[in-house]
Length: 127
Image 1 (cartoon, rainbow, N blue to C red):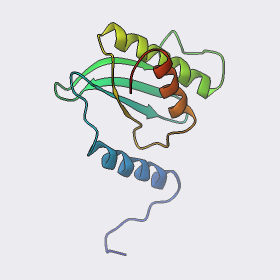
Image 2 (cartoon, rainbow, N blue to C red):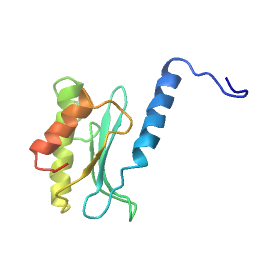
Image 3 (cartoon, helix red, strand yellow):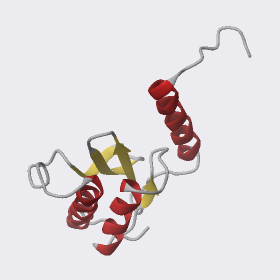
């Protein structure tokens, strides 16, 4: 072990691992005007999805469980993630986006992340 390296425990270790994976993924994934990046950010309570054009640095569409149409909705967190996926796809279509590059944000492609992606695909976004 190198000197000065801090050993993380518990949640701090988990967040650091997610951050490392996200940095590694972002080396290969870039959003353009033709295919912006659909990035998913997940916390223990909420999930946020944004469609981002990395060249201009603009967010084209976004949706989260904090939106008034979804907040306090029924169902578990996976059901709410499906609603967020459908809503972000609808807003992206309204902004003229047909295809996106999916950025899972360092999280595993399972559970809420997969539910959001599947709902976005069903709503018409191409990955």
